[in-house]
Amino acid sequence: MSSDCLFCKIIAGEIPSQQVYSDEQVIVFKDIDPKADVHLLLVPREHIISLNQLEEKHDSLIAHCMHLLPKIAKEQGLDNGFRTVINTGAGGGQIVFHLHIHLLGGDGLSGAGFSRAV
Ligand code: 5GP
Ligand code: ZN
Figure 1 (tube, helix red, strand yellow):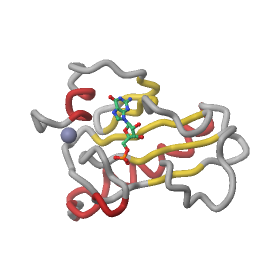
Figure 2 (cartoon, protein in one colour):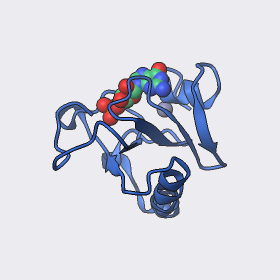
Figure 3 (cartoon, protein in one colour):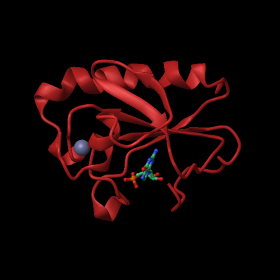
Figure 4 (tube, protein in one colour):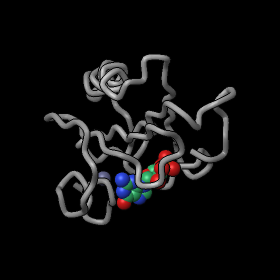
């Protein structure tokens, strides 16, 4: 836990969030400023800053995240597909420096997915 990290505070329950899934490794909650009908954030409980800080010890965690994404998308009714986005570093548009995967779907998505908005 990083004491000045927004997502660590959400994980600790110090800041409320609308959770849709939780297990021992990750939580998933609704983005506060949704860019599509469904806009969730899948967040590892461990405070990893970004993809740049991933190590081999995180391999099983990352595999877990990848397997969860389609399951959660299905639970959200996204039968026609979904989009995932990982912003890395300031130059990649990252604002919250705790690794997270955006899961987007439904109305509001179109085109190739390189919008500036997410
Ligand atoms: P980033 O640009 O770092 O990839 O995305 C951070 C995301 O966190 C943004 O989409 C933003 O709307 C979302 N966000 C920022 N603050 C909060 C918050 O307090 N609660 C929730 N649920 N989402 C947040
Ligand atoms: Zn954190």
